[in-house]
Amino acid sequence: MSPHIRKLNRIRLAGFIGLLAFFLLAVVIVENLLVSTLVAFVISYLLNPIVNNMERNGLSRLWSTALTFLLAGLVIGVTVFLILPNFSSAILGLQKEAPNYISGFSQLIEELEAHLSELFGPLISLDLKEYAVGSLTHGSEVFFNRLPGFLKQTITVMLLGPFIAFFMVKDGRPLLRRALNIIPNHIFETALSLQHQINHQIGHFVRARLLEALIVGLVTWVGLVLVQFPFSLLLALFAAITNLIPYIGPLIGMIPALIIALVNGSSSVELFLVFSVFATAQVIDAFLLIPFFVAKIVNLHPVTVILVIIAGSQFMGVLGMIISIPLASALKVTFETLYLHLTESRI
Amino acid sequence: MNTFTWSNLFRKDSREKSVLETLSQTHIFGNLSKRELGLVMQTIHVRDYAPGENIFSQGELGIGMYIILQGKVDVFSSGPTAREETRLVTQLQSGDFFGELALVEQQGRRSATAIASTDSSLIGFFKPDLMEILERQPQTGSKIVLRLAEVLGRRLKQTSLKLSELRLEAEINAGRLKT
Image (cartoon, rainbow over all chains, first blue to last red):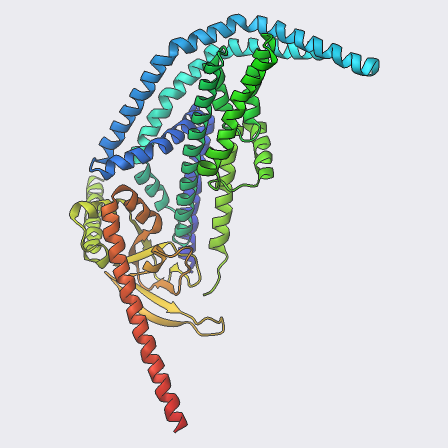
């Protein structure tokens, strides 16, 4: 390769890396842009197949995108309109009942502490009650105080996310092609292949995980309604969201319902029924949803998954736990592809 | 300043026109309608190469084919062992295409090295692009795949013919040696 070509390649590569770094920096620095971009990616991965389907039937890209977004907006609007009264009354009810649940929970802890003291005597001195009640009171105060701010941020993200997603679906491909144009010739095929594989894998992953969360949420909701458990919608929504976190998510999703059942003094049969609802959702998830939708999309070892989730939670909390798996799988694809492209084997 | 912008715009237009013309004259895209060619235009990548610049090397992982829009490309090949000398297989020019096997192979490796011998512009058409067309317009995608199969079949026929000729030649030579 001549020095001129080498210099040109270096300039092009620096340009591409600079563009990528600028985009990442802007996303991290500008308020709400990181979450909005993540939401936009999720929306575009969800709606892209529908837009493609419309395009296959003869509609232009613009019309397919506009119609899909309109339809999705309509479906979400109607759903929100239908469940909002129920949802807001559940939130208000929970806020009103929170002190009762905290005192009930403290009583439970007190009883547990007494049992432990009976069993182990003065050997151990626990201050579980103060610790648990303190963190619960602090947690609920923080939650309800931050709720307006969180709702404001959510509204911003909910407006900005779909807006970015619309242009991602409509113009994403030509924009990406233009960005790929500045990649030097000698690594162009590798970069294109890498981009395609990552996009394909993350798209499948996002769609599968959201479908999984939706089904788990629905099963939990129906189950809790059937056993006439309070706050069924809120608890099902919580279970659906926490289900996005592999392995530990389903356990976290079960905790609020079990606390409510224990504090309400539910009988052991009622407690068993509530537990069964969550267990059924998990059995459906483990034996039907994961093998058919999720497995083999992200081929990561369970130990890697746990380590990646811990790392994600350290950096970005719950959001980090959710996005750590697709990020790790993207990194895995990158290394595998680079390894395949860089190891030249002569035929 | 204005003149520069206008001249650039026209140059871009004329380049697009020549890309469209080259695509319509390439066998793989030859039976596509104007609208279908428009979709192909949205997926392909036009790449510029300096003289002596590698397009791809033998043994490298390949993901697609190239059509020469302008310029010349030399194709070199070396034998299975590293000791064997690299030799020029063919010289390709505007309108010729190469590397199409990589469009259908799973992690296929390039069987030859392609180097631009003059300032060249190539149209790259890769597996992700073909997948995109198949996803967005399956009818257009199947037309391309059928033509691609036709080209690969023809290449296979030529190779078999060449192989038979070589075998016959070898047999004749062996017979002569015996007698």
